Length: 334
Picture 1 (cartoon, rainbow, N blue to C red):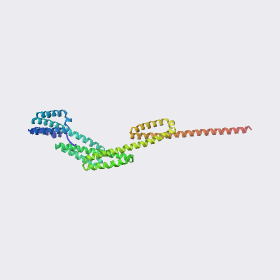
Picture 2 (tube, one colour):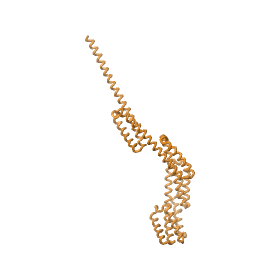
Picture 3 (cartoon, rainbow, N blue to C red):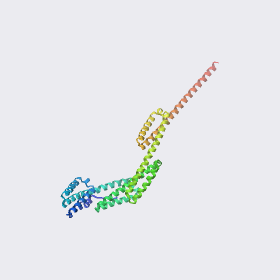
């Protein structure tokens, strides 16, 4: 997409020259007309953020405007109007560039995230709107351009929220969290569809409202899902911890059990602070380690039992050998 609003060589021709021309045009010679001109110039400079971009020049113009109020002459108000026109001439290229930068930053991030490929038709519509703003600025139709640029930005913002909502929806489905808050999950999908319909109908404020609500509801479903899932993993880790203690894994494989128990306690801290996603991950880790500790403790107990059994068998065999030897010796002595 080509540059949306301005190129540096174009700024002088578009903004500076018109201001110079306006300074040479006949000025109102009646008080009412001069007051009206000054008020219009003041409003225009303010509407395009002149006080923010050039506070010193704005204060000077305001002082002239206040002085005109005291003098109450056409010349004084015309001087104030010229000052506000000067502020506007300085401001408008900066204001337009700022809007361009704002639009392009969001647009570039959406392209990088694959949103243009996801919403090709409505993305093209937003691009068309942004280019319309460019043409309106070139035609010095500044208020219309301002409104069109704001609309273009809003259109990109809607797509951003809709795309984020779809990403959360995909995560919910991938983790099978839908059942944990089925009503909100269904409603979020319906609202997101309404957002897209409103966008295509040109009702961008409604589209933005619906896209925001859909994203909020999907995030709520995801939060409920993580909270419920964390509770499940908490219970499972707790069960495996108890089983490991029952089999004396804390003694048989002390180091492994201690590490698992440390992770388990950290998981509980995450859970109690409502950091459910991280709690779930840590509960799974501790659960796995408790199971391993139990298995190793069982193996040690089995090996120990086998060793004792083997020792008993050796003793019995030794005793039997001794008995046989005693019998043999007694037989010979007879």
